Length: 204
Image (cartoon, rainbow, N blue to C red; front, side, top):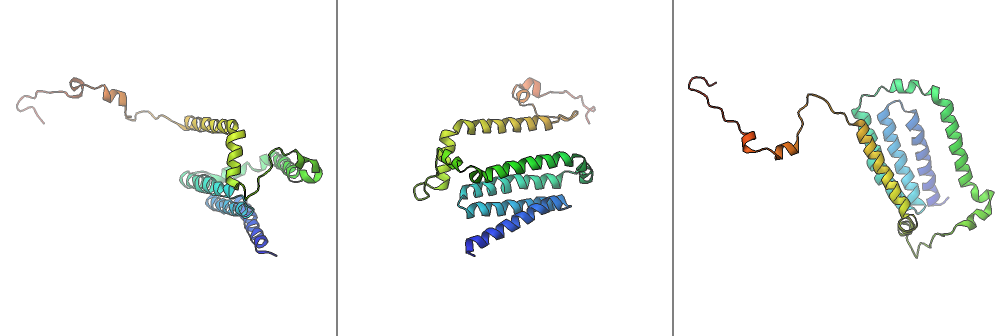
């Protein structure tokens, strides 16, 4: 067994074990930490097969942003996880059906070349040699030339989702003094200063 195969089995075993611990850990904070460990090992597998761009994106986006956000949300919000777990069995059949559909899709995608060998010939944009073009540069060429409009549409969809989440979670509480910039700028000395004449002996 070569050194590369040894590291592959090591990272794969840790990734699968930590993914199982994500759904089996009772403490939600521990689940998020195991999720971070899963992402790190998945990034190591990407780097091991030469997809360094995907590995770095997985570390930066998921470990550096999403998983940390999950951790802070779980730690700051008072969530009754016992009540959330009580409805798991009710939706178990639907979850199992979705899992079977996803598993069937993965089997078709992974085993597509074995089922239909002519599918490889349908690739119109072959991967360039690593000596001619690096993996990151080749991915950038495809993403920002052939699929630039889809990339912009995806960014627009994420922007709309972010604005929708902000609008749905924004709550204006009453009886709270808020800053009004326009009223502050429009103030004049006559409206800002009030001169009161106090007679002798009537002050505080």
